[in-house]
Image (cartoon, rainbow, N blue to C red; front, side):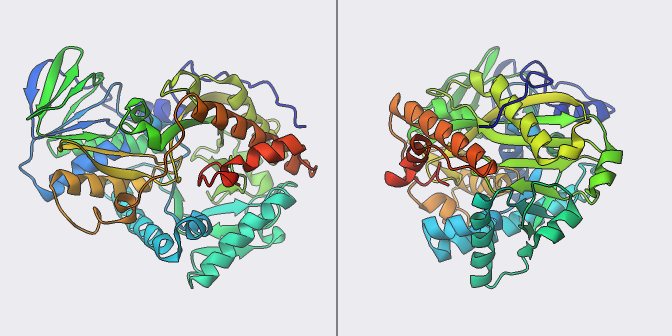
Length: 476
């Protein structure tokens, strides 16, 4: 059984390194005024992250005269949009799983919409002099144990069957080593339609673009009750916002809503980042900016920064109970797993000092894809369930939510993200008890497999529970 190292830096004491770096790079950084008094607008968007800001920008593009207001509880980029790994890729990465779960036609539709999102995000990031560290050198998915080989093979086989071999290029173990040398790396697949970005800089760039287009943003303004009516009223600490159209772009926070909770639950992910170590990156040959991840279910994802740091993430954080997000940002064991993975997968970086650690919730839907819709009696639109894969699909979310606000029937509102029925999780406390059992079992199995040992029988049984009960998430 793997032994976790004590994390060098405990999570939860400060913002993510991404947000600290992004704010330090802004010449005119300031917190926008909070909402005070009673304000009216045409469209109110709750959440100043990727989903909310893309929705605002796409609405402004479609209907320039709309009055649009965005409410953000902290500052734009403080939530998941400024904490994630900054991997920007569509759905070719999971094409084998989607084909198995939803059928070939739906899988191809999902992946092609992701390609359109990739094109749009690339255009935004590479125009207007925006310095968001866009690097489009692909992401390499690597098997780091014999048990992970099958996942690589399924991805390659599915893209071949679909005739899209340019999206997933097989790599031998020797070819993987040419990208990044590690004794843990086996064969891999190079997912070509992928990039990395500084995630908080992207969030801040979207914020600037929104302000330039006369979109009103209120920061330091947490949304309280949403009182349904004509118009709807959002209560804030020092006032209220009234609008006929409201967009709920709050991601994991929406798990506390009884009308959305049955179809989503919150896992969490943690990251650590090192001091700049360009000399060590030269030593292992990891100098082209490719993103890397392994083929675990609770994936390790890692990438470099412009100044030669290495960021390592682990998707194995704790599961919340009934929408309570407290443990999703302060779990020491999850930070330890991320740093342990850094030392294990890249042993030549043992001398690299970890300087920052942070974590955050992941809103996981019942089938691993985001879902969107309008709540009764109307005018209250939502988007959530990104399931740890949110940079690229939030643009899709913006297109869908803008279309819902405008009451349009189009390819976005008819897409698979809207028309399917999302599976439901069991009610509390069963969902959390079962989720934590399955999580612990999968962690135990994957750790044993990385040591090339047979997982304990009890862990194999626990890890198989989702498949036994026909659940589409939490499966290996």
